[in-house]
Image 1 (tube, one colour):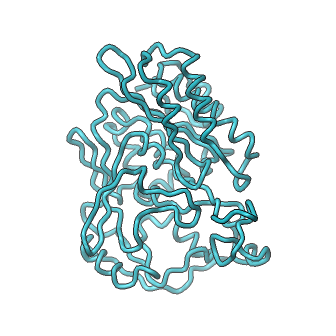
Image 2 (cartoon, helix red, strand yellow; image 1 turned 30 degrees about the vertical axis):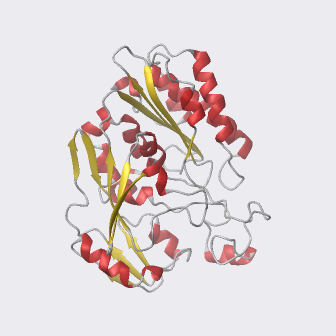
Image 3 (spheres, one colour; image 1 turned 135 degrees about the vertical axis):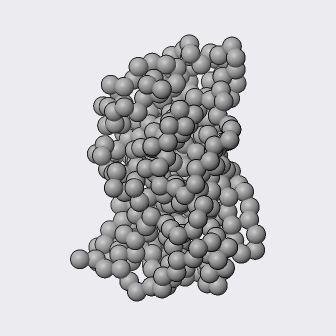
Length: 349
């Protein structure tokens, strides 16, 4: 049985108190909300903080408000997002992404803030302490070599969050609070392409809320590739969003790939292929051009499930499926086959 290491536990009642506690020793203190990622990592000794600060008892962090834009407290569970009819109607892609995270039990505990800050994953990293010790550890924890690419100067662990690519495609922002103040940044700016230092959030900052702008005119969808439909992390994913004017022409578009790098990867080139087309009569040629452009961005490595070349090819297929769904095609059978999830289609809205 893997046991947790010893640690101090603090459970403040306000964000201000939590920020003060974190500022005392940010180097060996970590934030815990649902604990579905951090606690297993601690059992495997991948992360060994001396202190944990729980956000569970802080009022307001679980709130979900809608007044044109959505303001989602970082402590809101993924289940609460899935159960919110406004999210399903106005931010369908986010609803789909949240609904495909792990299992119902883990969604009951896991939070939107936790999923955004999810640790990067790798075949050589997500193992027991003894397994990692036997191979000499890797760069991400205690070693000096990235076993995925031994000459690489940086860690290539994969970003496996489902909600981050979708929130980036929706143009969302996050609020970060510290004892010295607060700042609001785009979700896109929360990440860097580095498996170890994958977040731009400082060690003394707490992610307290997510703001999704008014989605009037936007349609969105999320497609995810994984071996088991009931549990697994994504090994490739696509978040797609298009905005149409009154005549149906696409005036803005965003395509963001997940699980093909150490951060979500946006393809502005792919999005540009869609501008000016009619969202409901989007041609197969325009969809293929966008899919080809997105394919160029995907650079998966051999450090997770399925072969890397096939995963790269599947990004083209996933973009195609996503754009067909946004066009209005009935892709429910495809979603069941590929994403292994039923009742998640845009066409049902």
